[in-house]
Amino acid sequence: MATLKETTVGSTVKVRKINGEGALKRHIMDMGITKGVEVYVRKVAPLGDPIEVTVRGYELSLRKEYAEMIEVE
Image (tube, rainbow, N blue to C red; front, top):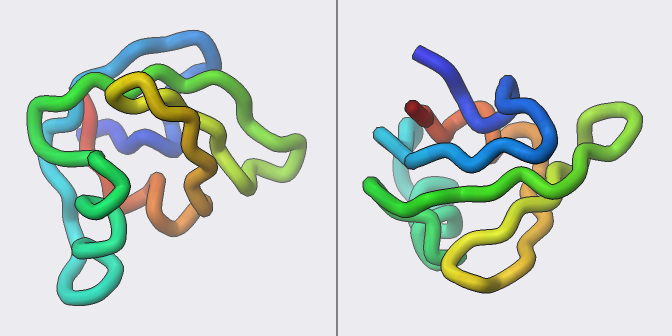
C-alpha cells in the first residue's frame, strides 16, 4: 500500500482508496480526488508540506495529513 505522500515528484498515480472518516474525507472528495482519478504530483515543499498536485486539470495544494490518507497505485 503506497500513499500519495510517498509518491515521487513528476509521477502520475491513480487513486485506489481514501482512508479516514467524516469531514476530512469529505474535504478531500470535494477537491475532486475520488477513487479511480489520476493525480500528477508537481511539487513537494522542502519539509513535505504542502504537496502540489494536478487533478482533473486543476492545480491543488494538499496538506501532508491529507496525502497520507490517499492510497494510490
